[in-house]
Length: 170
Image (cartoon, rainbow, N blue to C red; front, side, top):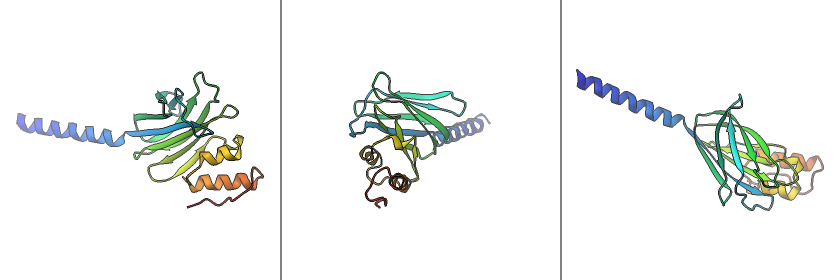
C-alpha cells in the first residue's frame, strides 16, 4: 500500500513539474541604437496588467537580454535607459508558451520602439515608430521580419513620411 502511494505521489509530482515547465515562457531580445549598434546596461521590465513587476534584467555587452519563467499571457514591457541619453519606451504584447522575441530600437530623440515576434511567426510593432527617421525605422524592420511591419512602413510612406518602395519583401 505504501509503495502504491509513493508511486502515485511521484507520478503526480512529475506531472505538476512538467506542466509548470510547459506553462513557463521566455522573452528574449536585443536592444540596439538606430545605427544597429548594441546598447548595454539598459533595463527591460515585464509587468502584469495591474503593474506588478514580474521580471527585470539588464542588457549585456551585445545588447541582449532574456527573462524566463513567466506564464503565457498579456504583459506590458518597459525599456528604462538607466543613465544613458536614450529615451525610455513601453510596449504590450502577448507571451505564448512558445516564447517571445522583443527587439528594441532606441534613440536620443524619440521613445524606444519594440518589434515583437512570437513563436508562431506573428509580429507587432509596439510603440510609435513615426518619430524615427526613414533610415532608422527601416533598420527597425530590416530583414522583412513581418508583413505587419512592412504594412506600417508602407503606411508611413503613404502618409508622406518617406518615398521609395513600400511593399514588404518576402
